[in-house]
Image 1: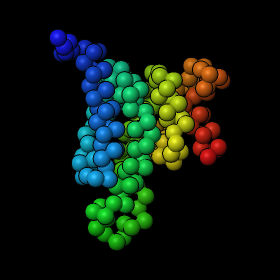
Image 2: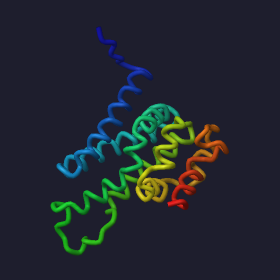
Image 3: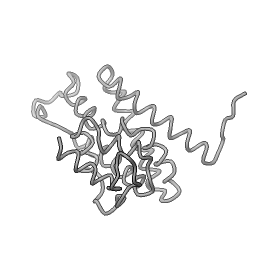
Image 4: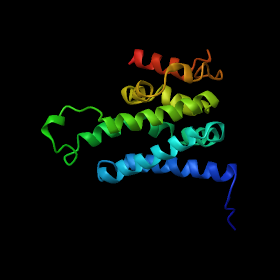
Length: 180
């Protein structure tokens, strides 16, 4: 017997988890099928924008999504950059030095906006650590660069063994970039 939620928080949580898994899968397959990966990133971007636009009603979905997808979200800029450097994506010689296209920057801005909303509402300590101490410091920093102003992010996080001072995600992210 399977319990399938048809509405409410359980459905939103399941939907957010499916989108998080889809993001990770799209990143994993990006080098093999760049156009499919780009289409999936755009679809997830639209979901995030819709939930961020719903105000408080969309916040639980965003929290669930970022709690599940934090490692993939932290790696998104590098994946997008890799798409720009694949053999089939640069038809114009003028774009050979493009790090992130305007479309990539828009995707990162939306993902950063959703992350800020989820962070202000409260993310799991694991999600905060996955983004704050991401292995690819540049990629995770692009979420902040293209995301909203710092005033829209959480001002602190719960104290944990990994974050004994309760530093905010932005402060932890800045420390990690400095250390790198």
